[in-house]
Length: 580
Ligand code: FES
Ligand code: MG
Image 1 (cartoon, rainbow, N blue to C red):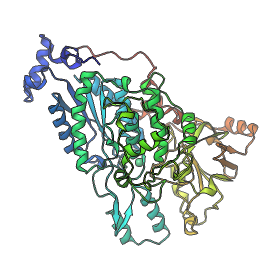
Image 2: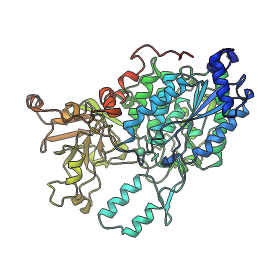
Image 3: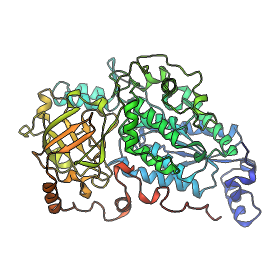
Image 4: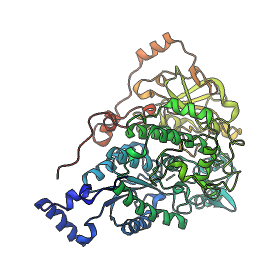
């Protein structure tokens, strides 16, 4: 591998020339207290930090960024921290998904417009991983991903609590009158008790694991708990490694091939991944360009051959990410898959080694947490893609989180036109609903939500909860949290807001979902659907100005990854380097 020389670095164009422009750059760097020795002959490393006072999962990033800087300095680089939008999953409304692409734009343009030679990307909370990576892949300079890592297990009076999953569970208990207000408040103070991301296999853990499988983190990085001292050391290692990557010119396009994305899908399945992983990975693969792009059909094909072996909630019933780390973590999981011939081992990673090399010596220390392929927690993969007259472009379900009797189910539709209508009706003791009904929520997709909120785990009507019903078939064009569970058909595409068939289903229509056959069908004739379509009028526009207006003009449908059309690779010629 040929090493770059200083003159070949991007940053040298800002700092090195003997001209007026560079005088400006140097004099202003001196203004902040840097000296020539800080940059001369050195790669400049951007550290994109998604810390903020309200980014609950990234509260350790204020310290971690110093540890990254230490590594950069040790390796002879010049670290520059650049704050990026934090997308705090818990607080940002209506949904962080509305802003994932905004972070992607920000990441790409921060790197492009500044004198950066390489980047450490600090993220972890749900949308921050795809947002940072989509931008960095489009920009194309060497980058390494620093995953925030999961928080510690929740603990309430000796009961282990899992992010999300146990909130839903105990909320149902409270609605059923089985939990007191005092107990509920105790749970509130026990479920999230350290820095780090949700510690169930939600979107955050799923996406951090996928990023390791893509080869974009250091080996083993994605499963280290946020507050473990190993996490601090990993941060410093990221700082050291990115400097070497710059000299080696190890750009994303030299790391990523279609085979890396196939590994990512394989790992997603074995993790029992969040359904959100599909949308993000589709979008990321389309940014990576070349032949990297993956589709819903790839997910379905891999799901049929890769079993769920990570026994982590919500697919598993006991363990959390902290247990996963102690059991061998992502390296243990990937070693299990590799030994079964399920991974491409010749793919490159940011470590400079192939995936196969990074897995040497990896072990599983607890075969109940990371199961052998011969004893999976779910034989078929985590996700199934369904198609039919209700979802011509596809929709997804997570069979491993579904009550088995609902995997093949027919029942009358009970339709809610939007989320407020659902909320208004769901607690009504007189709601005309049985456990056999199929609950349908529409106008919750990319355009309709807007931003495709996580409303897809439609609550079971309170009336039925009190009767002991804990799962029902539910269909929407929304997403659902990766920590959710239940018979929820999601991401129906095209969405109802743009006139997809979900807009045409009526209360009382018989709807059938057959997961083994991968079908979803409403028992309404084509002629009747055509009549309903002719009578359909689009809902009012969601946005008249601002970011939302731009979003609504350019957002792609769920099966295409919900990127903005103009951000995708192939939309136009690559943007050039800025004039200096
Ligand atoms: Fe940040 Fe779940 S809220 S990962
Ligand atoms: Mg989430």
